Picture: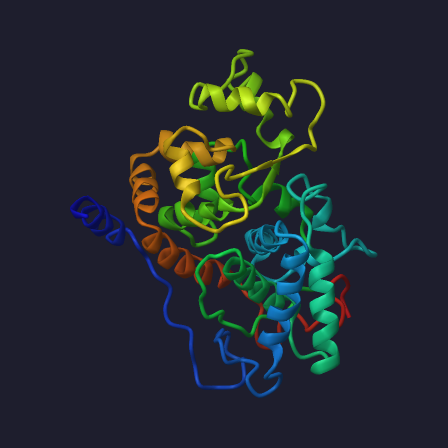
Length: 333
């Protein structure tokens, strides 16, 4: 316990928390997000989102990770404005076609179902951006993770950025410095990086996302020395050197559908699936200490994950008269 408390003191000295975002006003002309935003205009909004997400996750446990990932991949491009949800149409080239999303981003039909239900309840009132933020929270809770109040009042973008999707989102093969830079450019810090990476406690990754670790990590036709070799042998059975690129693997092979701290325990055992996971313990002492802390104390991980998700959800939201409230999340009005 003394070790945990000592580590916790170190971590809290690094933390930079976003300010409280709860306000009493029911308008949003000044750019604030707050959990009570729809209390008068659509009081059942949160329950409708929760109900549809619960049904989707019951049908397929993997959907919790998919919806959470959509929120990440949206916020890291132009901010949390659901540019990711737009289909290609006219001048719009969908971010769904980017290298980071093509053949992997999923869950769009669940967002469509939520939007349809909300349009029946409160026409053109609840933004797709807020739907996605709520769905990410509800997915986390349904998988056994922490809850948090979601600040609301975002509006939806009228454009997309496939170049931003290709360049801004941290990729499995990025270096540690590149990933940290991408976080910092969005106002997130090292603590947020380690904490939000913990979302990989649920979900899957394709063989193509980590194949180089098994066969040619450093361009020398050798496997990654930081990967446990017995684990690498297991992975090679379904991720061959040639072919199998779309085969799916659990990001956390211990409790793949449960949101917990086993992800961090796997990293300490050199069993992180993606290179972007394992470098948290091999490339930086501060991130290693945070990994150790979260591996030892699930409560501290959960508490910080909730804080970091609120912080991420506040990246450059459209508010006031900016953007629009889409009738259909796939298209501009």
